[in-house]
Image 1 (cartoon, rainbow, N blue to C red):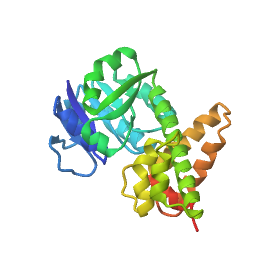
Image 2 (image 1 turned 135 degrees about the vertical axis):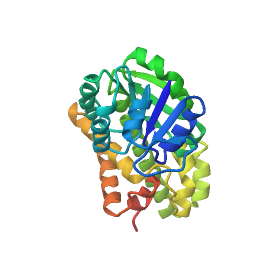
Image 3 (image 1 turned 45 degrees about the vertical axis):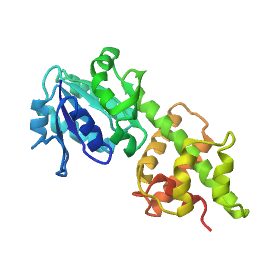
Image 4 (image 1 turned 90 degrees about the vertical axis):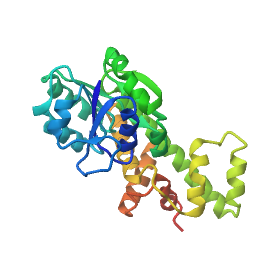
Amino acid sequence: MKVSFIGLGIMGLPMASNVAKQFDLIGFDIIKKETPFRFADSYKECGEFADVIISMVPKNEHFKSLVHEMLPYLKKGQIWIDMSTISPQTALEMKPLLAEKSVRLADAPVVKSQPAAVKGELGIYFGGDQDLFETVKPILSCMGKNIIYMGENGAGLKMKIIHNALVGQIQNGVNEILGLADQIGLDLHDVVTALSYGGAQCFYLDTKANNIMNHTYPTAFSVENMNKDVHFAGEIADSVHAEVPSLRNVIKVYERAMEEGLGKNDFSNTYEVVNKK
């Protein structure tokens, strides 16, 4: 299978690089990149080259625009795997447009951050036809170790969004408790060690504690991306009239972080929002 990978950002570039180790791949981004594979000249080249198109773009509007840009160059029988985190509704809106060109769409958003993308160890949630999942699984396996079929189109996105909603709540809990520990005079290094002894131990405490203690926030997953995802989760909750008070609080935290200009920083930077002196 020939693959065109569109969207070579902090996640897309290492993902595409791993696919290129096993499949014939070209890549494209609106910003010219140095890549270990051939960089395409245009959307036209991507459409004409590919059996499988993979997209990894930031927002709803970017995916919609990309679909419209690509439509003239798509061919019957192609597969489009969108690995972006967009709203399920946006994916479902674009599916009929692609179906008119006899192109099958699936959503396959990823979890974990850039270091896992480099290692090819992402988690991947697939939404789409079961037979399509089996067809593209060898490609997905280049990028991820944990790949799960979640159901029909949109199901992968729903899973990614609720996953990140929980991550945001866990991280906010870490922020609050480390801030409280600091205020009551406990040494944060000792607190992190002590928490690891019990049920409070968690991946986000393990990986973000040093950021918080050093007040430095190198970006692995940005505030603006988490802000987008928790708002998507709020929309999903609204659609079924779910009571999710902790999520609502997290949404407010991320709104404040965006207002303070922290969008490009790592989402652990919300510690400073929660614990303003």
